[in-house]
Image 1 (cartoon, helix red, strand yellow):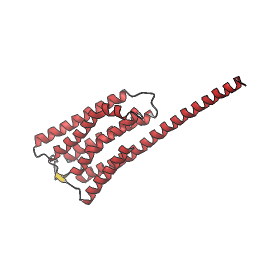
Image 2 (tube, helix red, strand yellow):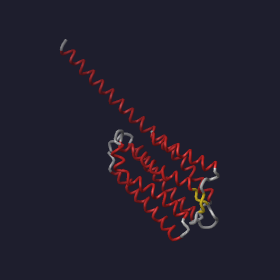
Image 3 (cartoon, rainbow, N blue to C red):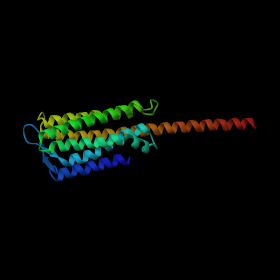
Image 4 (cartoon, rainbow, N blue to C red):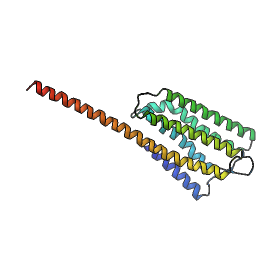
Length: 220
């Protein structure tokens, strides 16, 4: 889809900038315990756009084709909060005031939990007869597992449990794995839906053919 292509292109641009500019815009992580570590601003800019984009991509199959406007009307608060908690987690690292920084960490965590609860509510309202439902729901659950892992790594990095290199390596590998898995799931769901549409169309043609044959025999 165009959203997936846009997200992948944006990640390529951001990672290229980080590679060419030796990390890009790097601030000191003021919340870090122990050795000084950097806060890579380009990564957070990318996440601020990519996270809500990923949420939209994950939820689009739950609404089905032709319902993008309905999805966005339902989902826009979640998308806004998703971008906001990424921004809060970045500001939390660069602000020099410790109390304000940790308050922003807490706010970012609570904002994510609110978005996750909203996502659970969406899943509970999904049509249980929808095609490829296990893949659609599984993709959303996998996204939340990755987001939780990112949050745990963020805290581990700030508290010095893991090194800065390990933290950034995890984020990079996580981004790549998540994009590959997301693309595969989208392909599987689309192929499943297209196969079902083809089956229904063929059955309809067979039924019409039977009706035509019946009329021919009746008028013979």
